[in-house]
Amino acid sequence: MLGYFEAQQAILERVRSRPVVQLPLLAARNLILAEDAHAPFPLPRFDHSAVDGYALRAADTLHASTESPAKLQVLSAVRTGSVADKEVTAGAVIQVFTGAMLPAGADTVVMVEDVERRGSEILIAAHAAPDKNIRRTGEEFSAGATCLRAGQQLTPPALSLLASLGMGHVPVHDAPRIALLITGSELIEPGLPLGPAQIYNSNRYGLESALDDMGLTVTALHVAEDHESELQKQLGEAMKRADVVLTSGGVSVGDVDFVKPALLSLGAVIHFDKVAIKPGKPFVFATLGDKFIFGMPGNPVSALVTFLLFVKPALAKMLGRAEHLPRITHASLGCDIKKRSPRTEFVRGQFRTLEPTRIVEPCRGQESHMLGGLATADVLIILDGEPRIVREGDQVQVMPINWT
Image (cartoon, helix red, strand yellow):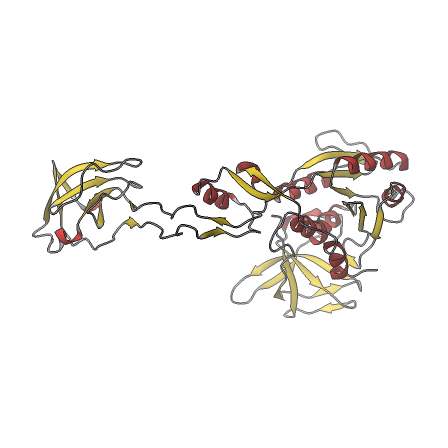
């Protein structure tokens, strides 16, 4: 049976980044930039005012005071999107608004609340330092500078930056078509009345939302009861319509666990079907040609934890993400934990304190069917080695939970 890192490596060594496509900005939300983005012009493009106020020469206020304010003539006003029709000269000012191009001749801007307006004149009672309240050309990026690196996830600020560069389309790694197959005769959709032996289909919503957080959508959704012929049919349809197939349930060794037989009958190669972890021991990784199949357990915590450990890194690598492996750091245990299995355990936990020493404690509800603990967790506490008591104060590895 493979260990956690061996299983993860066995998956990632077979995964390659997807082809590059050009997508409209909003269609690329949360996907991964495939090429460095360079500034076609300096940012800002021109000197402009950071405030509403008056553009003037700092030298004209050199001796200004409350007792003897500088008296300056207002020549005109310039709004955003316009160019001043006059130049600032000695003894004169031009009114400006936030974002407006700085008029020629001005080297500072005084905020409107710091002046007294009297008709066509203003009074300034203090010296205005040069370069005050001015955003200078290229102070963020010079022309040709790299603004975003390939591998960056296109979050809202990243998309806003690309839009400011004038990019209507953006190069990203093509998102794989994903099919989701949920198995289980006991499952029913939320909102419908439950039968005596039924439960609600939670895995669909957990896995779909996890994919959505990565910028991915389910292109084909299948639900199959625990019948071999039906599951084989649904799995075959899913594999025709998708590049990646995710299944939940039916991957163990019970009499109604039909995912592995169905995969073999369809010609897939099963690379492994269990991992020495808790939760999530029954986990299938298979390929059919250039298609990838991830068979997750049916218990909802196991499904989501194995998604984080194995599926998300593989999808992140396909999307070209620069950092696709889960981040692992260290923290101090805030209480004793009983490690019950020789397998690597991923205990759902919470940071109790972050500074100066990070302390983590397990959440309430650690069984693989108890979603409450995972719903409140912000970290997975990683416990390796033989069964034992891991003591309060011990340093442990932790994996911060990040769905995006």
